[in-house]
Image (cartoon, rainbow, N blue to C red):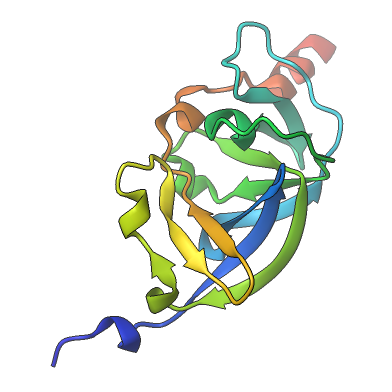
Length: 161
């Protein structure tokens, strides 16, 4: 017996805001969520890299997904969603600066419209909800992992010696 779309298990997603839009990510690729803190800018880094920050001794590259998705609206930039290292193809710790977080919810496969996002790089589909639509994004965007931040923690320790 084959598994049909309605037999598939729902996926837990984290809903978050970027500008005026609402987006979501599979919760399974997220390592942690932290408050936005002070970032260290990296000279000559790509436009989408906001900087790096030290999270428990790990240099974490902070990316602005608004730049990746060409979103012009401003927002409060309150939280950072840090991805599981296994999801960044060995490029080190990476996090997205998001405006706000909303909730974790289940998304059934039949609630995801993939037909409208055939050519949408980094988009898994549109999630139909009772009163709104969510754009289900992925972290499979080449530009996110092409930049490897220097190990500022190690450099600082060497400077202190």
